[in-house]
Length: 415
Image 1 (tube, rainbow, N blue to C red):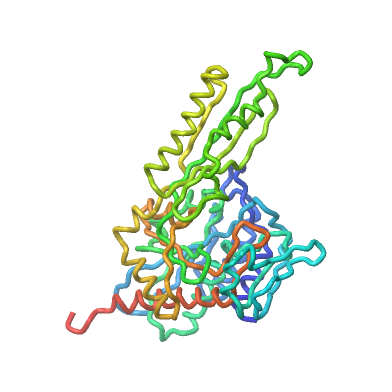
Image 2 (cartoon, helix red, strand yellow):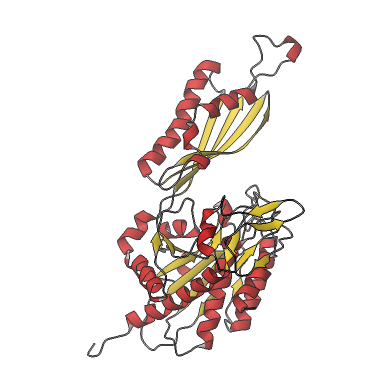
């Protein structure tokens, strides 16, 4: 078994779910368990300055080996996994030389991984796939990226003939709950630019993300004994359903793709007296993003006219913005990634991220940070899987990026 695969299998078996309801940083102590493991692994391969800080961030430095000035490059991945599906007791399994057919994940429960549902599997015939038993996520998002970065650094340390400048590494907590950069010290990190390895299929390079916001809708009803409620009761649960019905059905995640934005009802609970609806709002286009937030307020204004002032209260908070605005002025870092991919035999595929990354926030904090593929698929799902061969290409990509960064900075004769 390769060092890359061994690391990955070890990391995914550590439960690192983050918790959006926790006020602490990191939001869960168990993320520190993986953080400590990563520090030990980094120190074991030779990065003696690796450390875990009080907020759950792992930082380390790969020193350069050239005698001229090279821009400092950074690589970033996140340790947490999403808590929307089971995250404990992950049982990874390797499907060797995938034949292109239906994979049984769990015979007892009848859970399968089928190219009929997930057509990208067709392109992975002959690959070795890491899958789950169908009852938990895998954690390739983003432990594949972590394993790839560490394996690439290990390779460079074993091959000192490959030129490199100083490289900074960071593994962040709480990315899945939009707090991955809350305590990230950009100045101390000291990179001129960086890449997150938090993408998916082979060749992916992403520098456009959603603009993102969260919304909380509080619905105030009036509860009265149901036997005496005629013309008196206002059921907040039904009022909440009415609010949700006024959002366009076609603009939900299940019906959108590409650059299409959406409203996503993530939580609804309550009693007749009061109900709470929680949404995430997403759009790549800034004007449409603003309009989406305004629509929620407009619906509340209308329904307050029906049910009475204060019946619907909408609170909206922006989460992150489309990082394209910060990447376009420094597109050479995207071009560098595309060139490196082609040099290792991978055709780059540029698509908008239908989500966010730590890189989106870091780009607005002064650290331009596009996103690169890792080989994972079906993130946030019990059908999540990863291609070992694509993961190996991600390692090659990191090595090539570091090498090219050093070679491009080398003074020409006569300079």
